[in-house]
Image (cartoon, rainbow, N blue to C red; front, side, top):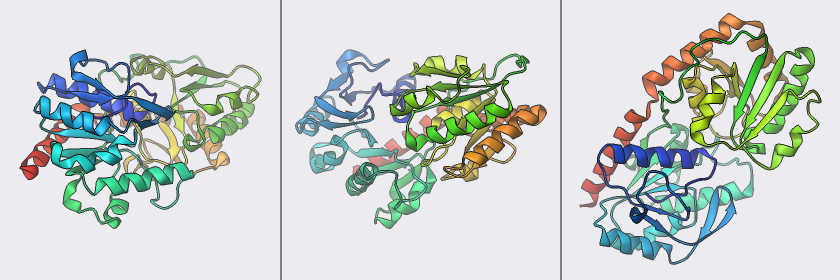
Length: 361
């Protein structure tokens, strides 16, 4: 597994879960990373290279990293190399070493509602670099089927694409045993405190809703540049910021909440949404990408990007209909149990590995 580890985002969470799941299923997993620690992997199986972080989510790696990876793969008879794409520059250069490497598998993490309209130039450059290198990977895993047409348009054969969505540890992310009845409507957000996740929209919407319903609170879990925006948003302390938490700690807080809300501007049905659904929370999120197909009207409320009044109306609806809100949460939990357990997803990933090895040979 080639990946970053330790950053507070879905890519790292997925990489950790997949590595752990593969080990539990009896596979030997080596990790190539710039991270100082990789949970659950023996130190002799962790192979590090130097890197300069550009931000918490992407790095410029040492030019010697691909060569080191090739040498370690040969030394340990590694059968497949799986890159979590969009974590660093090395993923782009690995294909140039193909004749020295085992079959290459990439999980493509950039998930946008449009292949041509992005939030920043930085995302555009990463998208183009990823597409360029994807042509030389043996198998490609997409976390969102909405990515498929953009990748096909770039000339990558469809028989190399497999959609394997994010999954959930449904035992860890489970509903609270008892419904709270303290008269307070608690909203929760989990993710980066950034423009692309809709934090400005969320804070503005909550401020308006809180004016009409003071018996409401908002809890923010995550870190980012926009954390200062909450300081003067609501003066009575109804917004709580917990910072970036360990993944294992998040379910404790989700179980204390009533509604999960993330009005993101780009992306799709992310891991934080699925984990909230698994805890039995109804969802307010943006109707973009795969979300429009996977989140039904009886499981949450979809809004358009940047529409503060729509988020306010969704909050209002959640507050006025307690029975409907609880029913939405119950259906969310059932959907996750049917479709999104990690055990099923990891079995699908192993099938991709087997196919890559067969084709490579």
